[in-house]
Length: 541
Image (cartoon, rainbow, N blue to C red; front, side, top):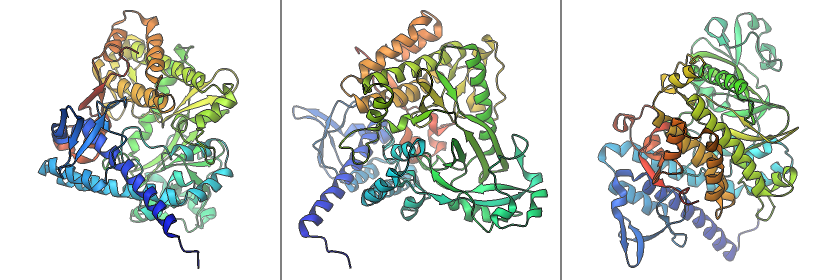
C-alpha cells in the first residue's frame, strides 16, 4: 500500500488543481469575449473601478488590457471557476445553439481532465522524454503548449480521457499500428507500389496470397472499431510497426524522417474539426505542394523547403486513407515547440535550447531570423501569386543544416489561391477538388494571411517569448518584407489590412467550430470564418 498523502500535501495538490481550473476558465471566458458570442460583451462594464464583466451569478470579474489578441481579457488576479463561466455561457446563448453549447461544455470538462491527467503523469512523461531525441521529442513538447486562441485545445472529442495517455502526444506514448486489407479494385494509390517499409500480409497475420488481391492500409487503434464495420475488408490479426504520435495526434512517426498520417475518430479545435481524412484532401494537398514547388522554382530567394507529401492512398472512405510524409535531412524543430518548457530545466524553453545550438544563445536573433524567413515567403506568395497559406505554427518547422536556417512547410491542403493572379504569373491553376481553395477575392486572401501567418505563426510565437518587444519585431519584419513591392496594389492592400489597419481581423473559432451550427453561421469552412476583430498590435510598433 502506498504512503498516505499528508494533509498539507493534499491541500497543495488541491490548490494546484484549482489553479489549472482557473487557467482554463479564464481562457474560455476570454475566447467568448473575443468572439463576442451571443453579444456577451454587453455584460462588460466600464466605470471608475475599471473594466469588468458581470457573470450570470452577478459576480463582477475584472478585465485588463495587454494581451495582443484581446481588447480586454480576464485580469491576472481573478480566480474563476469553470462552472460560473459556463453558467454565463448558457445565460447568453441562443436556444438554437443548445446542442453546440452542450458540446462545448463537454469540451471544457475534457480539456480540464486532460490538463489534470498530464499533471499527474508529468514525472513519467519527463522520464520518457529523457530517452528521446530530435524531432519526436520536440513534437511531444509542442503538445504541452496550449493553442494561442482556442481555449480547449487539450480536448480531443472522441478520445476518452482514459485513452489520452496512450495516444496523445503530450504523454509521449508509443503504440503498435493496426492494419487492414482492402480489395485492390477499391484502392487509389498516388504512386505505383508501396513504401519499402510497408508490411506484407504475412507480417500482420494474414495469408501471404492476399497481396495479389488486396492492399494493406494502416489503421489507428482508435479507428479499428469503425474500420471493422466496413464490408469487404480483412482485418490484420497482428499489429505491425511501433509508432509515436506527433503534435497532430493522427500523424505518427513511422521511421527516421518518415511520418504517417491516418484517420482518427476525434475532433480537435472544435466539434466540427473532424480528424478523419476525406480522400479528396490527399490529392488537393499534393497539388498544393506541386504549386508551391513551381513558385519556388521561380523564386530563388525564399528560405523554404517543402515536406514530400506526394505518397498517399485511399479507398473512397474517410477512415480508409493514409499519407506518407518524407522529411528532409537536417535538425528539425517545430515552430509550435519553441515556447514549450524544457523538462527539469528551471523555466528554460525549447527556444533557448535551439538558440544555444544554432544562434550562439541569442533567442531574439533566432526569432528575428525566423520572422524574416516567414514573412518574406508569405508576402511574396500573397503579392506576386495571390496565394495565402494556412501554415500556422503546427505546420511550420525550423530546418537547420548547411547554410542559413530554412522554413519547413507541410500540410498545404488548406491554402487559398487566386486563379487570376496565378494566370497573370504564368502558372496554371491547380485542379483542386475542393473549390473553397480558390478565390479571386483579395480580402479573403488577406483574412488568411492575417489570422494564420500574422497572428499564429508570427505574433503568438514571438509574444510568448518576448512580450515586451514582440510587436516591434513583428512589425519591422513585416514592413521589411513588404518594402520591395512598393505601390503594387496587393502590397498596398496587405499594408492596409495589417500595418495601417485600425483593427485586425480575427477568426471566430469557438463559434464556428462548436457553438453555432454551419446552417446558422453560413460558414463554408469553419476554419475560415471571420466574425470578429481585435486590436492592431502593430500600430505604432
